[in-house]
Length: 247
Image: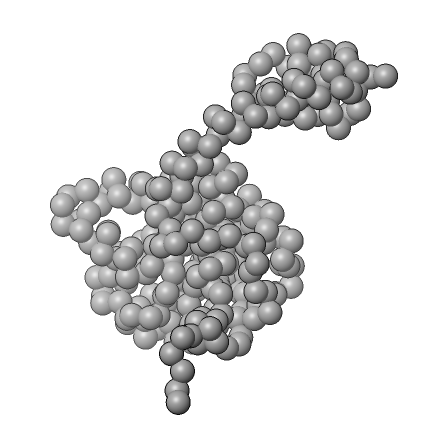
C-alpha cells in the first residue's frame, strides 16, 4: 500500500529544508509503504529540528526578551478582541504577513507584556526576527548610538525585525529628543514591519507622552491605519497573586 499524501507531505517539507532535490523527494516520498516512508520522514524532521534549534536560539538572544514567555496557561479573561482578530488569529501570527500593527492597551498587570513577549517567542520559533524594547530602553539605546556616531547602523539593526515590540509606552514621559527618536522608529516601520505597542494610556493621552500633540497624532495615524486595538480590563495578576497583603 503506498504512503498517504500526509506522510509524503512530511517528507517533502522536511527534505526541502535540507536543499534536497524536489523530484527525488517526491518519488521516494510516494514509492514505499507507509511504514517504509515513516522512517525517512522522521529522520528528515529530526535533522531539520536539529539545524533550526541554533537559529531559533540566536533569534531569541537578539530579541532580548525581559523574560521568556509563552501562551501555555495564558489567562485570556482580561482580553477584549476587536473585529477581525481573535485568539486563533493572534496565535497564527498572520498579522506579521500583512505588516499589521497591534496596540495592547489597558489596565496594569492584565497580561499585555506577557502577550507581547509570547508573540516574540512565536516569531522566533518560526524563524522570524523579532526585537523587544520598552519605550524608555529604546530611547536610551538610540540616543547612545547617535552619540557614538552609529545611529544609522542601529536603526538598520532595528529595521531587520519582522516584529518590533515597544513596551510600556506612557509609563515614563519622553523628552522632546526621545520622542523624535521613537517617532523615527515608528515612521520607518510603517507598512514595512509589524509593531506591537503595550500601554496603559488611551490614545487621547499620548500627547502627554510625546510632549507634542501633533507628533502623537502622527504616530497614532500610522499605527491605526494597518493596526488593531486589543483592550485589557481586570485586576492585576501580580496584585492578585502577591505575597504581600494588607492586614
